[in-house]
Length: 159
Image (cartoon, rainbow, N blue to C red):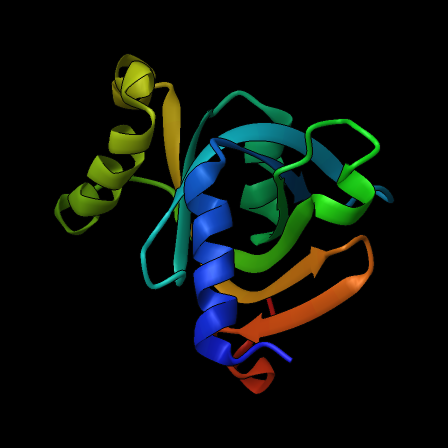
């Protein structure tokens, strides 16, 4: 059994080692919508940030429904992944859709991981998305699941 600090460390290492995630959003449509995004996470695992053009389906979905899910994994697309790969599902809600003085540190975190996206991030047509994380579900060895809850499930807002 993994203790909480070890689980936090494993999740943090996975998030730090990966540059891309699959984001799932949903509006009032029947099906969720998945998008590939470049992301960064805070050291305390409480926030994940990314940027997106405002003229996208994912942005429209987020404005309609701020609850999101991300999948971040380290697979190599080989048979060994069934034993070696790790994946984490992140559940959270979009907290902000812009950068003001209080978010400059988060924008710096994002750009330190993705310096090649600076012009994109600074564009007026780009939204900076800040996700408040509720839970992480880490899967390893194809079926071993461990949960890390950042917030009590009773605190999850009803949007």
